[in-house]
Image 1: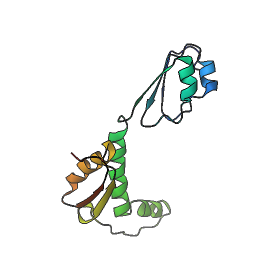
Image 2: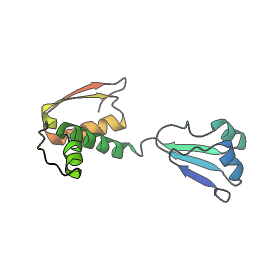
Image 3: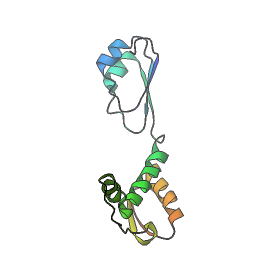
Image 4: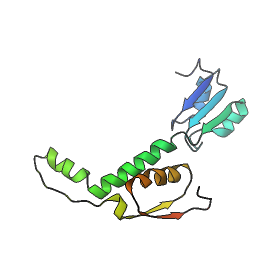
Length: 135
């Protein structure tokens, strides 16, 4: 499927020697996200294929998903959903995000995004652990 392409833009798909053998015109591999472990870097270097990646591209979506999952867990969203699908109704009480302490390990693009989105829920305690700096 890749034989006529000059550039492959990949997510987590493996770009192996076998893929490069089939991609006879391949000049560049670009990964969306952090990490190049799914790309055979030594093989690409042997062939003169340029490797690039966009480490920050998925960060906003991951930060939003993280806050969404925090809310789902605090409000037990999954439990009444399962019960409703089983024809039952039980009222669950949850906790508010503004009333909890949130711990964030790593304040890079994703951690900073989680902090930014969390501020919209009012005052909460946020504990940070990071070797870098927080803006």
